[in-house]
Image (cartoon, rainbow, N blue to C red; front, side, top):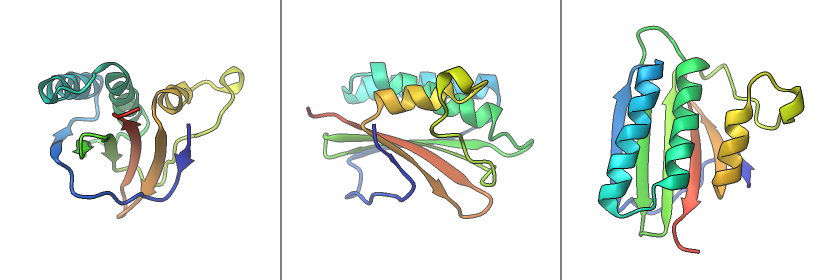
Length: 141
């Protein structure tokens, strides 16, 4: 697992899906279901990616929630070699705890799961008031 704070630029995605969802448990569940459907249609293994989407969407719904403001899910496949998952919320001032030991954390376990499943993940800040938590999975091993 590698955590980054800066954004890695990639070539234009060969496939992309973006949707705005309500920052609720229902919105987080819908994010996972939509991601699973799109990844399956694209022929991409769903397992780890679905878990990453579920964790990032749940974090956006619980910790990034601002009433009346949706969160955004974006899936992008680059050259059939890389899947990038992004979840953007409107609580840019509230950064996730990225390295909290499980025994000391009341929350924060979701990002430990993301870190274990993703090849890279990180946080992009802005434009205000937004933040994007992203994860990348290498599709070719």
